[in-house]
Length: 132
Length: 132
DNA sequence: ACTTACGTTTACGTTAACGTAAACTTGATA
DNA sequence: TATCAAGTTTACGTTAACGTAAACGTAAGT
Image (tube, chains in turn orange, red, purple, blue):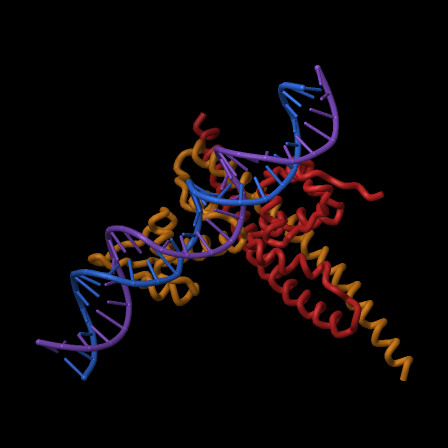
């Protein structure tokens, strides 16, 4: 049997509230099973939740995150389905590349600036030594 | 003289509305000059706007973006100021690293999945050939 | 039998980040 | 001089993504 999780298990692990997880379900991002009226989360559900939260950290809306994540559970029966799936994957992949360009730019920017600051700081400290 | 821009110049260039730019000003992210009551944006203002928008694309809130961007115009007069500036830069840099880890994970994930899809598609196409 | 912990649904409240409309100013142009 | 086009302020509206509170169910321990 595969491992299952309660809503507070996942809430604890991912540091979100149960409300958040239920909200994601209402938005169609996760679809846990039920034991009576209680939600039961499978390993797959847990992975999807992790993907949603990573998407959010990267600046995607829930709707965008859903579009991407749903590709991972798209049907792959016929060749036609597979072809359109691969197309959509390329499209989303391009979005991620754009983000990587942005991110690398931001990091490079900051590194150069920080380097200049450190240089300037060293110079100031050298002057202080020289003044002793 | 340095080049200046009107609000609609920047709105066009960055594909946002003037409302958005004014909102960023109200939130303290940009502080353009004035000619009478009209706003006049300098090259520096333009750069700040670009930084804000990049921050947003990377999933930062306006408040977070401001915290980062303000470091680039922090005072660097005394050694103490420079030391705390370098500290804060390191801190923000770590945030960007975290995001890069997330992003690289997402891309790697997707690439592996896309590769499997392409393999499966080729196999289907080979079978079709064999059936001719 | 009672409390405690954990879960549920329903529904209204909140915040960030703008959108939108109204009423006004101002410089350029026909 | 009238009428644009582009700008302004003020203020209310909207949407996503939850927070929060109420009222309730249920299984486990005491």
